[in-house]
Image (tube, rainbow, N blue to C red; front, top):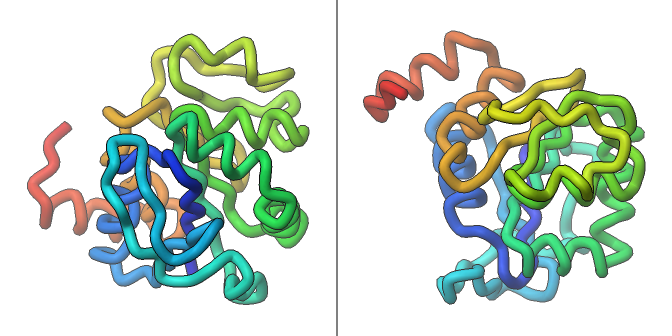
Length: 181
């Protein structure tokens, strides 16, 4: 199961595109509302979450994904339960994925210390001791996948499929959606 945390002000494409691609690959995905079932994005689009934070089954978690959007990132950073879930995912060996501004959350809690990562350009000073890979759309370091920003949502989502189900599964989805990038 892949859980995608949605805090008020999340970046739409960074949550919905990876969720769509993962589901196309047959991977179970649940959108997690931090403050209830209705979560409003950075551009005012309201999404209905599949589960609440309290309903997340950490035992089934293969991956925890954090979309960006400054409001969404701030929502996650201010939620002790969300931060505890991130730590639990890390401690259990589940994949952690973060895109745009969200890698700064992982940096702030020390998960990205001395690890390769990427973030939204201009936020590198908030990445602590992470080894920022400027110019890359996605970066993988062990069980951590980071993405650059909204424009990298398709590459990021396909990389998540590759990490969970292999290169062939990612290629099948890439072909099915006619993504030639």
